[in-house]
Image (cartoon, rainbow, N blue to C red):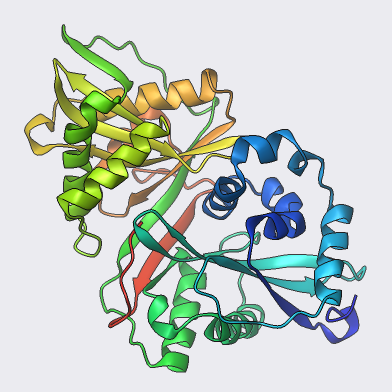
Length: 362
């Protein structure tokens, strides 16, 4: 395959300007690593319509189909180019058999509230990134990314800690945008599946309910979305933008609430859905209702429904290193938290920002 020669260990970086093309090349690999690839895969599926994609051609794509798509792209008049829209970069190398192997993915996407961070992902297991493997590959990605976007677009990068630190050093050196000394986010990536889920009898106070949010809840959900964002120094929201976010989550049926007799105490969003995996995000309890068990009640019920009613194999989430919510997730059955032995599927993740770049939101 031109550009991939096993004897010279060459590396090929490709730019994908639409989700269909990206998935045609990468889906078999992403599907094999559906848990760790949750952000990358779900964001791409969202752009092609996950239900349509998963019901039609994607489940039938094989490595041979993906390699044929990759060959067609590599044989075309391809060159890196500047874009103001969303895109993906993929980095490939040749296996000993000569077949291309997907080694790194970088996404640079936007959404309703602006630009996302740059997301990095690799199918390699955490802790298996020797510097002589990682450094030249990150160098290739950063040089290619500079041809695609102005440097101020890259306000932060999120992914496995070692990937992010290497990328941030290289990007800062290449662009002059200093790395913010305080990480935007340092988190454990955890999962719950039917074997780890911890069921419990739920006895809510009279008048309390666990349910999906409706449009009558818009103002209350928007307020909790704003409070959640405001607890992050780096990504605050105005009331107007919080209302936009809440409206989108309610419209898509993606946000659940703990309803305390008409008072919305806690929210929990279910986003980033793929065939077998969903993600829980934006778990937040307003201060007046903390220490009442609301978050645990809601997270357990939402997790149960995803696993045993929606038929997913796994629910994933990120939780900050210093977040007391780790105890809640641990009691529900999310693996590797609260000082227990870390599962080999648990990853340490990091978001680093760049001083002076144009801040987006996620």
